[in-house]
Length: 254
Image (cartoon, rainbow, N blue to C red; front, side, top):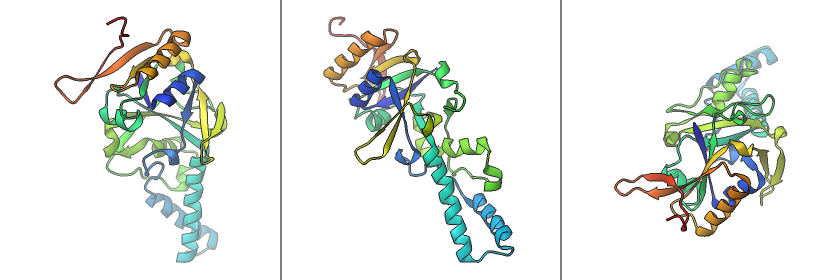
C-alpha cells in the first residue's frame, strides 16, 4: 500500500532536497477538535480525587481549579510531547489537492507503507495508525485509568469527526525530543523535522495545475537522488468530477 502526503510545491521540493519531513503539533493542525476528547469521565475522576484530597466533597471553586489544572496538564503534556505525521490513503481527492497542495499547483508524495520506516521504532515513533471517524468525540477515561493507557492515548489522537472521513487519513505519532532538526516559523513556533529514508518514497504526483518550473525542479531532484521513484500526473477526468492519476510524460516523450 502507498500512503500520500499532500504538499505545496515549495514545501514538497524542500522535502525532496533535505530528506526531512515535518511532524506537526496538534494545535498547528486545521481541526480545532484535535486532542480534545470528551472529558465527562475524566472530570468524574477529578471529583473523586478532590474527595480524597480534601477529605470531603469539594466546593465549586475548589473543583473548578482542579478541573482547570488537570485538563490543562493533560493537553499540555500531549501538545508539548507528541507530534503527528498526517498521510492519506487517497491521491486523487480534489478537496485535498485544493486545501493542502496549493489549489492543485503542489505535489503529492507517495510513501511505501510497508517500508520499515512505517513499522515503528522504539522511543522514536509509532507504527502507522488508521484514523477512525465518528459523530461523537472519543470518551477519555478517568485520569486514574488513563495514565499509562496507550490505547487511550492513541484514541485521543486518532478519532475525528465524520466530516473529515473523505481524507481517509493515516498517522504516525512521535515525540518532539526525537526530532532530527528543529527550526522556527516566522512567529517563533518550533517546526520539528524528521529524516525519512529515501527508499521509502515510491512516487511523486504533479497536480493538474502544477507549474512547469516545479515539474522541472522535482524531475531533476528525482533523477539525481531518487531514481527508483515514479513520476505521475493528476489530470481532470473527461466525464466525471474526478482526477485521473497517470504516468508523467515529458514534452519530449509526447
